[in-house]
Image (cartoon, one colour):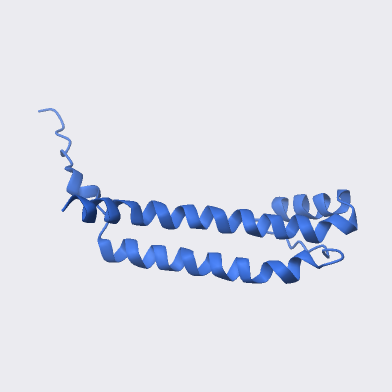
Length: 109
């Protein structure tokens, strides 16, 4: 007797609207926090290196410190601010990705 795989319906993968709204709110809140810190970050003269402890993210920490060492100190603040803006834009795209199905479903009715 062959193994019968269950046939999943589209409803099995659907995300509840309340979860979509809460995820969009959380992503939007994170984006606002990042954007609110950009003016202080942009005015930094230099970014101090982080203390890399042994563990899971050590390679990325060391890579970030190496990038800081290779970047001129006068550009470290503006580049960090641009990184924050880029992350805020990515989070804003996540907000749109979460809300788009709700908006299109509301417009269809």
